[in-house]
Image (tube, rainbow, N blue to C red; front, side, top):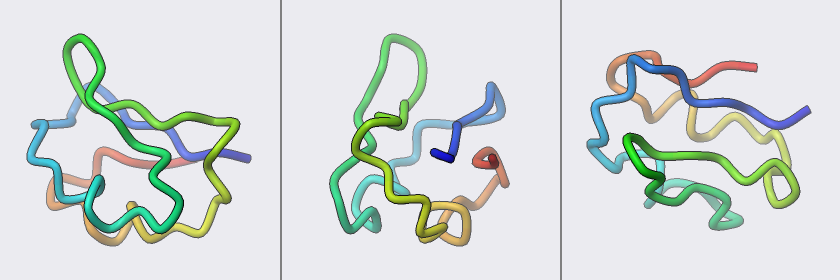
Length: 55
């Protein structure tokens, strides 16, 4: 199951550079994870400074 970014996202971009499959991109108001590309590795979860990413 792909990870999701919650409203707590502060758009810092830390997760974008850490994602090994480039599944994260800037959305309208915050970053978004493409569920079709995400491999559920969890790297983004550990890189998020505000714990805005979860399953």
